[in-house]
Amino acid sequence: MPVSAIGVSPPRAAASLRGLRLAGSLLGLAVLSAAALRFGFRPASWDIVWSALTGFDPNDASHIVIREMRLPRLAGAVLAGAALGISGALIQGMTRNPLADPGLLGINGGAALGVVICILGFGITDPAAFVWVALGGALAASVLVFLLGGGSGASPLRLVLAGAALSALILALTRALLLVSSQTLDVYRFWVLGGFDGIAPATLIALLPFLALGAGLAAVAAAGLNALLLGEDTARGLGVRTGLARATAGSAIVLLCGATVAMAGPIAFAGLIVPHLARWAAGPDMRWTLAFSAVFGPLLLVAADLAGRLPLFGGNMQAGVMTALIGGPVLVWMVRRNGVRGL
Figure 1 (cartoon, helix red, strand yellow):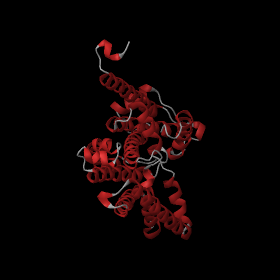
Figure 2 (cartoon, rainbow, N blue to C red):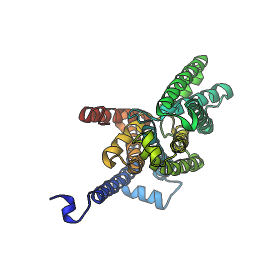
Figure 3 (tube, helix red, strand yellow):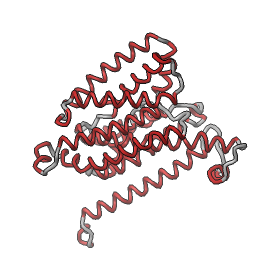
Figure 4 (cartoon, one colour):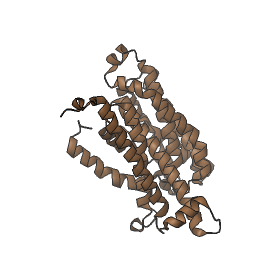
């Protein structure tokens, strides 16, 4: 029996199904987050987790581990996952390139160059001090790509070419600087793997406004990107200011990716794989894709961080390594199942 025959229109039924999927994903994220607080190299009981959250005892070692180590890591993974998922969906929608990721606009490269200059030029080795230089480098590189690509009138192809060219140049400069100092290389190679070790609550609070503003701009840009997916001329015919839509989406990408790279380093695969999973669950509507990306991203990074803390991986495997181990096979499966065009 067709859906319309039972009094429910197909669009309404599809929206209800998406809503159920989103609610189920949020429930899964809540369960996984609870597991991330309990399990690790040294698992804790549920009673200890609850008492650490509701009645913190600074003299209890288990409470310290949960409140001061696992809880900030969980918060960082959730925020970074949402930011990378949303920004990946925006990049793929804006460039109409299913294989685009946050590194495409020079964000990762700019942040990495900023960190290298910070270590080499100022002798700073504390990862907490990398936040602002990494954010500054990411913002500078992204703005330069946007300007080289043509500013508000940039086409997807020009943005991709400008991003690829600048990323290659930044990578060459970064490698040249790393050859100068072995100490710089030792500090940098830990940061560049990407992870949530030692994230301080103050860092999360400082970056939260950037993430919130980026998410807000992404929501504003969603309708314009929906029109752009139909083609440039069609979007203009619908009254969409295409340059403004791209500028809004680009600003959201810079804020979200720049803050995330500054906080946790360049985490690979999350911004690439999450939008594909979101489109599979949500369909082509960019608004729903962004909503699912904001949930699937945390699911991936919380799972990656939790897996890296298990005894199987020595209890200290970086989340950036685990995302590649988890996301790589998933992407291969999706390509084999749907083909490249199906992405």
